[in-house]
Image 1 (tube, rainbow, N blue to C red):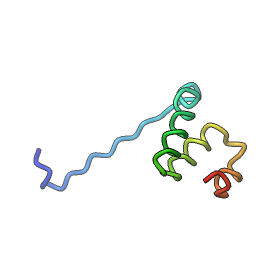
Image 2: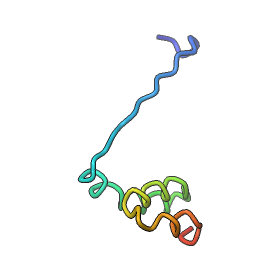
Image 3: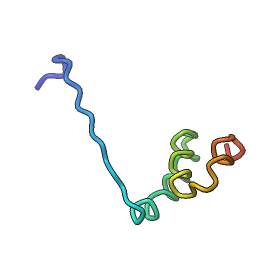
Image 4: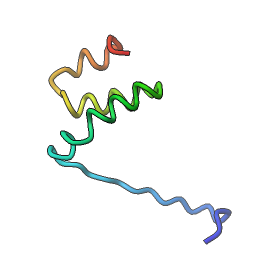
Amino acid sequence: MPAACGLKICTHQWIDDRGIAAVAEPAVRQSRTEGMQAHRRAAEIRLRPEEIDEITSGKRD
């Protein structure tokens, strides 16, 4: 189908606690390296939800 048709496909992925444990820390490191702080925060919140206030305050940026 040509891109000009205006159709946009959105996908959603779900991850369980085991998946979070496997990918969140590398995602935090890569996001920090690339300067993508919102992505880093999202991964860090999933990894350590009890630290959400500190993560979202910008202290780790």
